Amino acid sequence: MAIYIALLHYPVYDRQERVTATALTTLDIHDVARLARTYGLKGFYVVTPLQSQQTLARRLIDHWVTGRGAAYNPTRMEALSLVRIADDLEAVVTGLEQEVGRKPKTVATTARRYAGSRSFGEIKKLLSKRGDAPYLILLGTGWGLTREAAEGADYLLEPIGGKEYNHLSVRTAAAIILDRLLGGVAR
Amino acid sequence: MAIYIALLHYPVYDRQERVTATALTTLDIHDVARLARTYGLKGFYVVTPLQSQQTLARRLIDHWVTGRGAAYNPTRMEALSLVRIADDLEAVVTGLEQEVGRKPKTVATTARRYAGSRSFGEIKKLLSKRGDAPYLILLGTGWGLTREAAEGADYLLEPIGGKEYNHLSVRTAAAIILDRLLGGVAR
Image 1 (cartoon, rainbow over the protein chains, first blue to last red):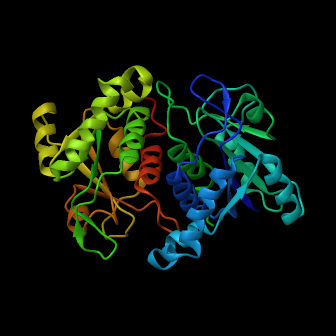
Image 2 (cartoon, each protein chain N blue to C red; image 1 turned 90 degrees about the vertical axis):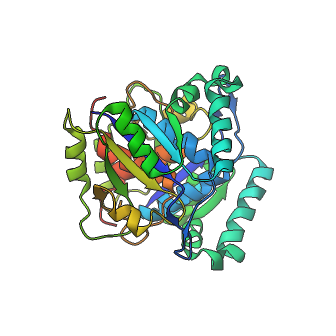
């Protein structure tokens, strides 16, 4: 079964819990692309409504996939080949549905505790079933996906759960989430 | 038992497998400090022989721990309070021995497969024993710790083990390693 990941720069909270569109962090694109390749994902969507940020993302990807970076670092090319750019989550879902023939099930991740979240074990089990709908894992930048975005997903994953401290970067959170959900699966 | 982590900028390989000292990546310091705080580590050593890089690290830490960053983002202060700067691994080991009263056992991590490496399960068991020597987990920047540095450690941890692709950033590798070794431990 096909698993995809999306890094959402909107709609997410800023530090005052206002809904915002964050700027791109280029290292996030590298890190999540390398994770996506490591854990056998089929694609990694960088989602932002800001055209200037899309241009930046595309320049970065082109450099590593078809530009001078490809020869300089072929393993980076391999990872960044997985990156796709989209305006919003809706476009990702619609595009994937057209491509794969089935609507993807979304799995939101968040550091906050919301009612109805599923354990890592439950989601791992879901993802390991073959022949199921494609899955799309959602990561939020900034201070995290908005409540509406999190609760609007088909599944909501429990927080990683630092008991006293719960402030990881989205890069390192993505690493832990993918390893917990897919690390044991031979891919 | 006390666990520490060290991010070594020397001695590591560059892309041509020459031994080098890498430059600091400031995001690594933030990310690993936040991981260290999340997983209850007692300290995080940024190790570099380059004085200019030590100055940069110290400025970053001061900003977040005692400067304007402390009020702006207290959770960042909490994480970066764990950071210490050292010239080399020997200084870390000697300093810890003086502080804790026992020589730390070192655990090297690497993406390469070397003979004699221990599984995540074995090292997790070691770390979970109370009353043991302090442990010091070693991370390499660049293209990884040199063979001598890896084999010179008390323990060598097996690679994370992407089967087809084994090129994670040190930040995301640190996240996966700490979660596998300490994620289940209530701290």
